[in-house]
Length: 191
Image 1 (cartoon, one colour):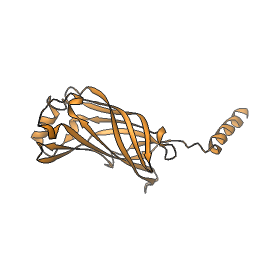
Image 2 (image 1 turned 135 degrees about the vertical axis):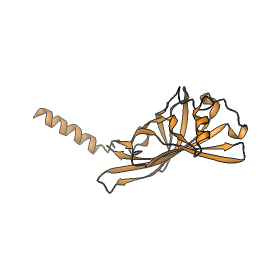
Image 3 (image 1 turned 60 degrees about the vertical axis):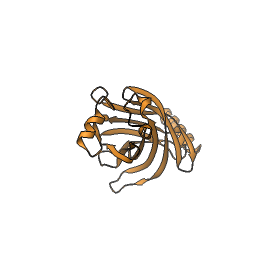
Image 4 (image 1 turned 60 degrees about the horizontal axis):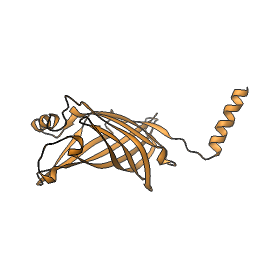
């Protein structure tokens, strides 16, 4: 009886204090409601687009306290697809992602800074090609709510630019091709 009363008091104090509790989500990659896409200049003449098809992750989010959010993603680098088999083979090789030696890339957020209504900067450690660097992802909240299958979802889009040399990628296609833009579009299912 004492334990139940104590639990009720603690729950009541949390609810009445207005403290929001973060919800945990699994990124819905299985339902193909998440994408990790990239864009890089080809010699300064055109854009090369591609995607990574195999990744998984989780995030915790509370609209009232976005600074308490966190993100963790693991991506299989060999799942790169630029819509050209020979190019993909080259990009997976030692000149670029070296997928046989580094089959996974990971991102783990270290902090989230609210930047305005529905926007935030997510700072975290990206490990790619065996190198770990802090990166900044500019994120935008898309929306949240009930889905038709009895679940609850939240969605975000994030963008960042990476310098290839920062991650040990030494291939040189000229100054216009020294960085790659990443767009991460994720929809998570609340657990």
